[in-house]
Every structure is written in C-alpha cells, then in structure tokens.
Image 1 (cartoon, rainbow, N blue to C red):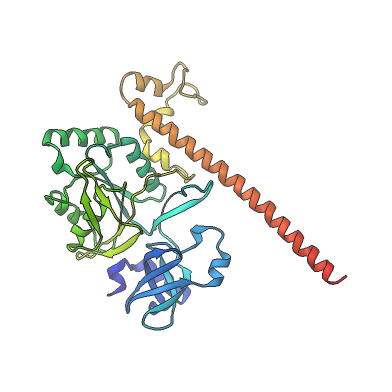
Image 2 (cartoon, rainbow, N blue to C red):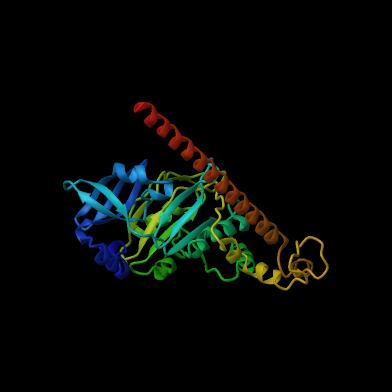
Amino acid sequence: MNLEDIGFNSKIQAYLREERIEREELGRVIIEHKERYIVQTEEGALNAEITGNLRFSAESRLDFPAVGDWVKLAVFDHNSAVILGILPRTSILERQAVGRTGDRQIIATNVDFAFIMQAVGHDFNLNRLERYLSICYASKIEPIILLSKIDLISEEERKEQVSKIKNRLQDVPVIGISNESMEGIKKIQETIEKGKTYCILGSSGVGKSSLSNNLLQQEQMKVSSISDQTNKGRHTTSHRELFVLENGGVIIDTPGMREIGMTDRNQSVELTFEHIVELAQECKFNNCSHISEKGCAILEALDNGEIEEAAYENFQKLKREQSRFESSVREKREKDKKLGKLYKRIQEDKRKRKFQ
C-alpha cells in the first residue's frame, strides 16, 4: 500500500523535507485502543506504542496520537514500532470529554469531510444535528448530512424530513440513504474524492458500520441485527478505525456518541447559526440581550417566523455550554498552575534539606 492511498499529499511531503524525515519513517494511525496503536505504513500495518518521553511531555490527551494522525516512527521489525512524534494536524474533530470537566476528547484528526448520520424516526433530531455541525465547523471540516433508513418510511414522509433539515440548515448537503436497498450509496460514492478523509458521525444504531461495509464493499465492521421495537441496528463498533476505499478515499468509522458536549472553539456555534448572528447585528442596541428590547431584530424574526424558536433556543444553549467549558478550562489551568508551584516548592525544600 502506498502512502498516497491513505491520504499522503504535497503538504505532508513538504513537511517531511523541511524536518528531514524519511518517507520510510512515516505512518498513519488507523486504530487506537488504550494507548496502543496500529499504524499503516507502506510496508504494512504495525503495532505501535508511544515513547516514554512523548507520554511525559504530554500536557493533555490532545498530545497523544489519535486515529487519523500522521506519525514519525522507529520501526523495530516487520510487526512493531514506537511512535516518536505527531505531525502537525490539519484538523481536530473533538468534543467535550464525557465525565471530565474542562477536558477535550479527540474523535479523529486530519479529517476533510464529515458524514453526519441520523436515522428516520425516533433518532431524527435537528438540535443534535446542529451540535454535530458546530464541532465540524470548529475545525473547518465540511459536513454532509446523511438521513439513513429511508426504506422504513414513505416517499412523502422522507420529503418532509429532508425539508425540515433544509429549512433549518440551509447550506448543508443532505443525502437520503438505505443500507438495505442501497439507495443513495452510489451518490455517496460519487462525492468521495481520492486522497480525502471522511469521518462518519452519529448515534448508536443509525447504520454507520453498515455504511462503512457498503462503501468498502465487504463485511469489515460488525453489525448486529435490527431490533423490531426500535428499528435500530445493535451497533457493535467499540473503537475508531480508518479504512481505505477502492476509489481512493479514506473513511473513519466511530462508535456511537450519546453526548456531544461543546468545547470553546471560536466561532463554531456562530457558523452553525450564521443567520441568527447576522440578525443580531441589526438590533437597535449593541448590547441587546434579545429578551425583551424594542428594536431587537431576533425577536422580530421569531415573531414573523423567519427563524425557528427551537433553533434560537438551541443556539443559546450551545453558547452557554461553550462559556461553561471555557470557565472550566480556566479553573483547571489555574489549579494545575498552583499544583505545579507546590510541587516545585516541595522539590526545592527536599534539595535544601539534602545539603544541610
């Protein structure tokens, strides 16, 4: 397998030349599992670990390799290697780490496009779509919405759901698909560009692994049977994994995500709700709270139906989440700074006692 098959391009080549890294030292992380990695190289897939120095110097989980990363390797034999460093990332798809205040979790890196999947029926949720869009825009990743399991509803119902998406999210492409009848799969294949990386996002059971299998044209990801009660596939993906498609594109499948907490990436929410942000510029007062002021352009737009109340409420909710996360990060940094000073003082006291 050539490196070009997994997304190698002229920018990476230029970096290798500048840093005097040999092509043979390069690989891309295709699987991550508890700080153990499988890295694809031109010579094959290698089991890899990070060096102690890389682990020690890491300030957070963001400094560890993730699926999609290009890494510099020291290869020991035909099966194992050590990761010496991570090449600069072109994008980081991330969310707020579940259960860890002020921390980020990387979903995938060096992603060009994101397929955001929602199934018809109970999984269909416009607010959740806006969350996914925001984490994509945070890293300049182009989103494409996939409405899956369209074989389960009528043509009229399908048009209604697509219309709801386009009315609220006007500039985002929407493709209806069925992993059973294969409707829409060819259209997805036609959108995939050689050398580009695509990440599949969505809740458990919406058909992400089935889509990966259909795009790969082989049974690569495990998919369990569909529940009669919920029409949901029992999704069995437990880790992120990168695959190479026959037409030259790269696809990253991810586990289902129950929570998509916002981080403090600048302008990500504003880009999702661009129309609301533009309306806010037309308010009579610069410090308008958009609650009860006369001359508020947003309140007027809500009254005349120009923007949906649900969309505005979701905008406010996501902005509050961003603000809370930003505060948590500041508090965490301050706490770490104080602990660092305490540790330094303790070490200094030990050194003084040693020479007394």
